[in-house]
Length: 334
Image (tube, rainbow, N blue to C red; front, side, top):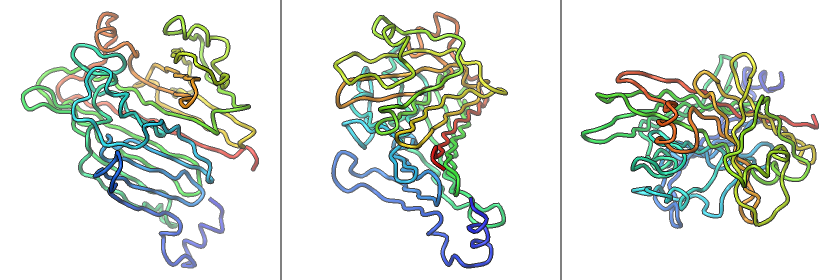
């Protein structure tokens, strides 16, 4: 943030903090998202966000300097499904900047759980959104909520999410604390589905990942081994999923996409201790065309697959796990 803006905040030249950090809460009236809540946050010089409380408090559309960052599917914004079994998750996958997969299954349907679990179809409670100051003025907008994945007689996983988008800096940070409130140990895989689309993922864009190895999921994915770092030609090809073995930097993993034609670079960072695995999703088909950067603590094969490999993440009764993910956007022309 420029010194002039800080001084304007401090000396009273700004009459209303709404012009620096705007918060608007609404309920959709009509359409596929009818009756669902949304929180639109706009910050001066930062990342503008649409937060979806009835979709796991995930991040919908996002912009930086008027440029859309997030991929949005043809489905668009919708209400949650009441029972997302099998592959039904895809029927209500609207994309957005970040969709959470879990908390009891990630990837393929497994052990009675549907594709990517139920988290993005759970409604958040204890929602609180505030402007926060560091003493000199408004520094950020911080949104918090609680999401419970619970059965009356079985499991109880609770996730407390904090989203922070900063004034004067293109950065949004998501901090999740997941706790097992149940009586027994519970599988708790989680994957953060960061979705980037046009115009960021197009043309001259290049993706950098500090990986020591890249592993294709299947034969279709094998075809992307030499081209995963750039937008592919649009065409009727199958989706491609790769796993990168990331070395990281001081305990943090990262992936960076630069597009000089758009003049932006976006860097996704996550703490490797809790999210040691990175998956990449590429779909080149017309009307899809998306890049997914997906830090996780699990595979995308489903919980039975991870259980067989003795790699299924679990939380013991009373155990807590904190995961941190950030998306930072910078101008390449400044």
